[in-house]
Length: 303
Image (tube, rainbow, N blue to C red; front, side, top):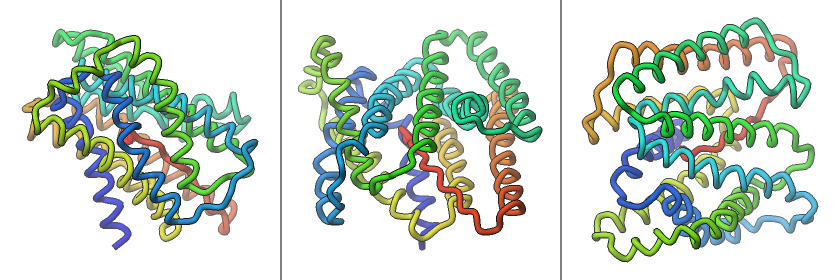
């Protein structure tokens, strides 16, 4: 049952690009509305689970990651709207590679030969995808901001790894998404495009509500609840279904086509990072059989 729930979450997050394309609002408006709509549901969930009172000093890293989360959503939505969904998904999913690159610098972690190989292969895949998209006439901004989104989420993961005293997942998620909404609010007010929400047709309104409730409140709550029942390596292995569903939905519902170069590039990125994670977990278990690595993955996807 837990695996079915996890696959369902990956399907929901995988459909994010299609939903984004279906709503005629700016990336900024969508990122803000996603947080605004999600918050009441997350607040109810937090109260139902009777989360413990938290010392405000413990919330600092979650506030910082909340700021990054808001801009991560913004850049990813921009990528979805200004390049192909499949390319944005694959470039965004370079996130584990960015973590491998910066973890030794930020957290003083050692980098293995396996991780170096993953980085090289993934970067080669990135060049194939970016080169193809530029030849097809897609602007570089959508590609660049998709990459920035992956870097922002990688930073969030690094912040999460550095936290020594954690708060419960419900409180952490609420604080991060509330912070994301607050940090985006001034930009939304200055931009003024949020007023276009009044011109949306009924279907676009439904998609926008689903973006906040289904893709954020429901998916995040389901995802974090699985950590009590599944090993972290299982969750990580299933998380690679998200980009695969994202690419599949872009082909089925948006009519995108994949070239050989894109497929090879995607295989280089997703395949190498997946294999790298599995080998890393195997080595960790051999060194310490009792070790349980818990990596909280934040999506727009997660995302």
